[in-house]
Length: 243
Image (cartoon, rainbow, N blue to C red; front, side, top):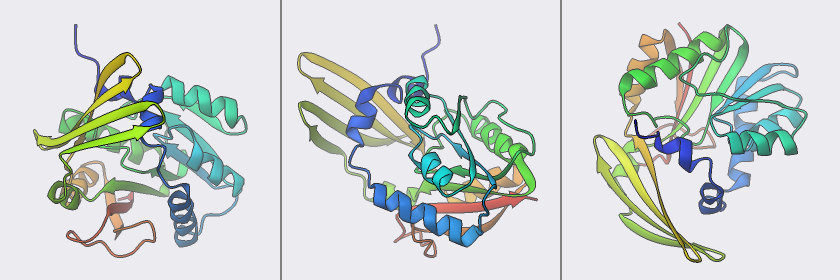
């Protein structure tokens, strides 16, 4: 039997959300507002939140007056989103599968929700689906880690305690991926999960986009949309349109 993709199990657990509960909602709001202002989104614009998780960005965009759809692979995430945000359309979908034909004015793929697949052709398939789902003048915003800076500053071993749950996270590079081994101790339960994210550079993305007939129009390095610097930037934020 083929081994299940790591993200199908890990993202579908409550432990994933527990480990990352410290993520700053204020940062997310600053980022959303910066994108809305730069792109001059208009009420009624159709926006896809691709790999939407539990839907916090989709909810914020909906409250701003945009027509939003959220897609995520995790059944647990989508169930949560549907229960708590019934006014937004959510769907369980793998980004390697078709999710629209010239349907969206904007596609947002945020907070390193890409680079999870084992093979480059799977990443390309996902990017091609993004291009296909955009309207002719639509814009893709893909927010990724700055792989160069993450690799240089890799914390190899870390313990994170959250209430009664203890996480030990070991990080290393293997097969051009950042790998996290996540050991969970929850009472008597001891579990292990993985995260694996490809070390994709701006050049890697440009090549993927070119093959998908997308053209990079802007590159930024943080949630305030400052210029990108390989050495200094925390993020790699790419904006692209259909070529």
